Length: 77
Image (cartoon, rainbow, N blue to C red):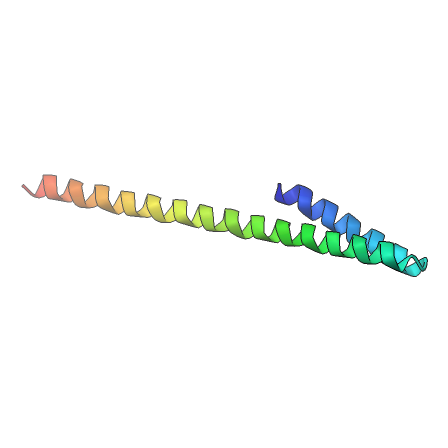
């Protein structure tokens, strides 16, 4: 969803600039606001996915450390 939002947001921002250049200010403002909302959604999605991946890496590291401790405890007996 983030990629779509980024593409749509960037397109709307370009449309906004073109509308302001052509003296269609109300349309430019609306397109600009919608473009900023779409880019914001894309940014939120990117951060959310990044944090999710970081959490998965942390879980994997904890599981690996736990398995290593258990293996050492079994071998030490």
